[in-house]
Image 1 (cartoon, rainbow, N blue to C red):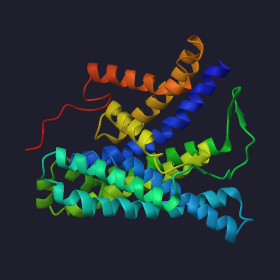
Image 2 (cartoon, rainbow, N blue to C red; image 1 turned 90 degrees about the horizontal axis):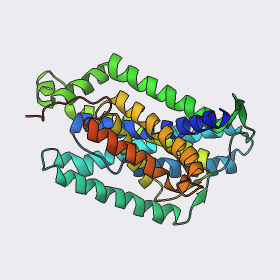
Image 3 (cartoon, one colour; image 1 turned 90 degrees about the vertical axis):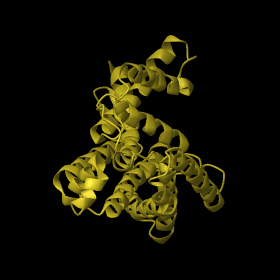
Image 4 (cartoon, one colour; image 1 turned 45 degrees about the horizontal axis):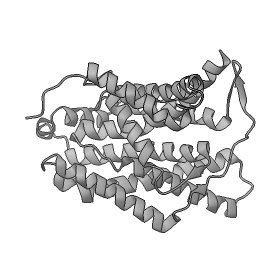
Length: 309
């Protein structure tokens, strides 16, 4: 039982990060019908910006408590990622809104490569160690262990998801986002500025990616310029699994994907003598994704809707 609980905790930690990134994918798709494949690299920019801020804090104020440094790093990474994502939308995507779908897809891949190259030029090619800011002493939970960094990640992810749901469902901006997602032309006739809504959507998704990026570095203690590719691909898969365009689906898909990976690597890896262990954990997630989409192509919480006129 302790092993099962441990794998569930590991899956929740991993799935929380997938969910934070998947929300950025699903929000942009819901409003624009666009897959922003550069979103994983926005997470990387957030991690790099957070590390740069931490290096400055360690030099300027080394006596600050670790959790304060981590909070400042997250707070500083968020506007950096928001600015990057807004620039991406303005420069790369805005002129392609009415273009064939292949054009923005190729552009997104190009933006991803550009961000990775710029990061490599600024921060270098080698993996960078991320400092351990919180106590390494684990917390015992029903016989399983969870670190303080993982606890903070779960709390931040839950708080971010609740805040996003409240924003989308209870605020004027949220109503404008839902109206634009439903029908941008009619929303425009009702006085909704679609450009402002789209920019806000990109900015909010980038803020969530910044939180995930800094906490990814804090959890796994290492970051590098190409780190965003795999989490970005997994998060996109989580968004599709849950139902692309549905924020609840993105949250559910991320958590489900993380738990599947953790349980698959832990249990099936042991049954196969390590042959299908942690190095092959991607297999389990994508097999389940294929099965779910074969049975229900719209995802777990997606709805079958007609294409926009």
